[in-house]
Image (cartoon, rainbow, N blue to C red; front, side, top):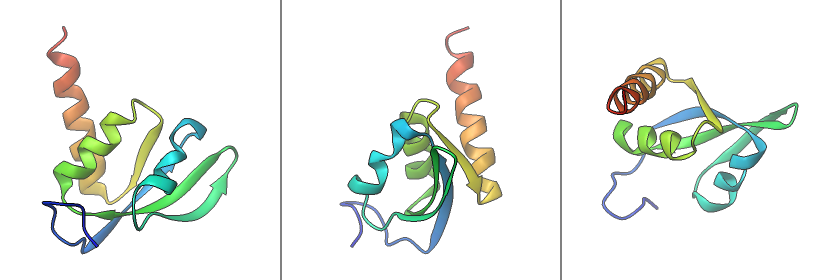
Length: 88
């Protein structure tokens, strides 16, 4: 099932999670572990909306990186630049 107010996911994002972000696997429905890479996890996360995913990644404060899809990589980078610029 989808989170309240979000559409059912039609795509997945692939994230690399540092140990401090491993809790995502337990908290978010539908997250699957693809593999371990050193201490990090590579996971697939249902992609409800791009905005939802950007918020999730930015809320993890540097403990997650987007590997796929490319549009989400760009959206997270853009949002991070915008957030940083507001503090300059």
